[in-house]
Image (cartoon, rainbow, N blue to C red; front, side):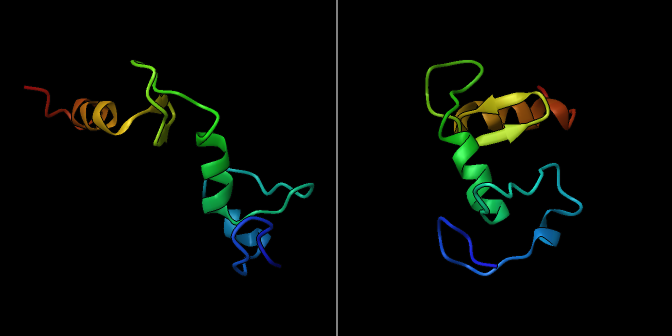
Length: 76
């Protein structure tokens, strides 16, 4: 199957093992589908566009780095 957005070939099985569901109405590869979600979101801590999606919310690059340090237990 071809991604409606980028045109790459993918399979609905590519969604197995990731926290996302295949969208039959607008079939996109996992990367484009995530990008479509991110483009509608802003960072949990500032008004910058979100660039990362986590179980705890959406983050910009700067706040994602802080989030990643915090969850890894390396907070100084």
